[in-house]
Image (cartoon, rainbow, N blue to C red; front, side, top):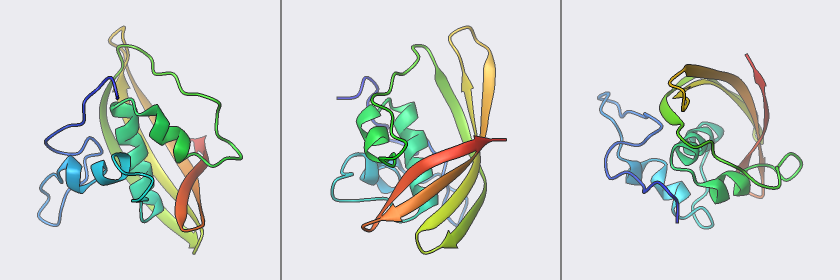
Amino acid sequence: MSPIDPPTGPCPCGRTDRRDKPVAYAMCCGRYLDDFSNTPAPDAESLMRSRYSAFVLERGEYLLATWHASKRPASIEFEPGVKWLGLDVRSRSVLDADHAEVEFVARQRGPSGAATRLHERSRFVREDGRWFYVDGDLQ
């Protein structure tokens, strides 16, 4: 069980529908995080968004399972007291049927109260019908 319970309201990733209304966690990243063995993210952007939600909810198992084996760390540690403040997807590029990139900015506030931004262009690969995070370049 995650130390942070899944939300019952809007998804932490901030996805909105066509009317610009927040999408519920259960209809967005929740379906991937809560059943990742049977319900993989359908595209690189959805995987990136679900991985952001996994950081917010401290779901290390999901993060490791969706990290490509060639770059996957042995474990994930979450910094106590970090509060995630939001995600902004800047761009998405489908390079071919099995490779994509997503540029995003994730904002967080550390235990000291200082806010920081993580701006990354992430690379994803699809293998056996599943998308995996490979790595990224900080912008």
